[in-house]
Amino acid sequence: MDRHYTVSVYIVHKNKVLLHKHKKAEILLPVGGHIEENELPEEAAVREAFEEAGISVKLHDLNTLRDKYVDTEREKMLINPMHMVLGEIEQGHEHIDFVFYAESESNKLFPGKEESNILKWYSESELDDIKNELLDDIYLMAKEAIKYIKRKY
Picture (cartoon, one colour):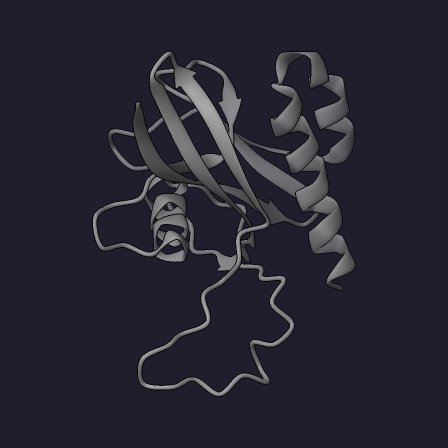
């Protein structure tokens, strides 16, 4: 069994979520990719958002103890992913995916040179319109990300 650790980042800006057409899979997905050696999942999420969309993001965290916790020299509270998903990419190849929800202050996109340039911001109703084109989990998490970010305000 070949397993890799990956991140997916559902980025929201003004009640719209960013999806891109994955170059290899040729389906709409959130930005994301493999976690590099010695990289934390949260670092990979921020890096992938910048590499694939050219934007800076603020990751959201469900950890309600973060501001109350006193860090020690040997421990750090990490940003919790919203979900963790085990996905079979092909037989014998799986991804353990840390799914983050994030917010961007800008909707201006600047994908990297080697990245997909087919990116679009989708509202909830636009997601409903293309539901049959999306994997079920992508549809559900994209909708959930928009609702989650809305609740924060």
